[in-house]
Image 1 (cartoon, rainbow, N blue to C red):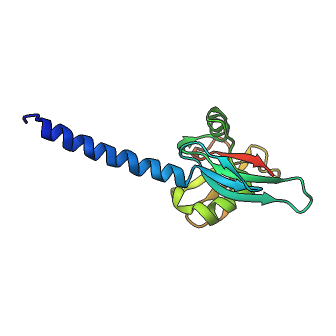
Image 2 (cartoon, rainbow, N blue to C red; image 1 turned 90 degrees about the vertical axis):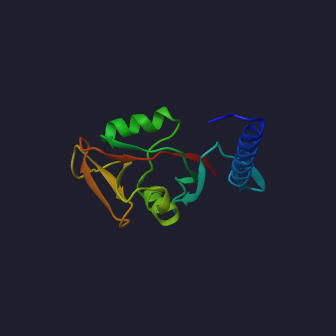
Image 3 (cartoon, helix red, strand yellow; image 1 turned 60 degrees about the vertical axis):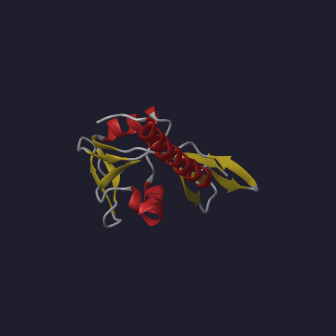
Length: 152
């Protein structure tokens, strides 16, 4: 294949259009509104919603971090989430993620950060095919996504 000035310019035009498309998408998803202020999101983060508990102990916004892992034990999944600046979602957040961002997940089991109190060595997980939650032994290998929280 012969490289010409015309082919280079054509490729440059394609790249410029791709950059413009990505920049526009980033502008649309680069923040969320909170008390009349724009709170910035990092590239690839998605604002999910808020968790407000009746007793007032949990009042925060949920932000889904980019990236996912598979084949992780519960301990390894928690360590991975921390390594990217997040944490595994809790059960309430898992339900909210299923309700609002199901298409961001494989139809598989994902770890939550909550241990299962009635069976030592087990933790809660969320299924993103059917939306149900159950528990599994922490040595099993499941998928994981991370969230970060922004206090209200």
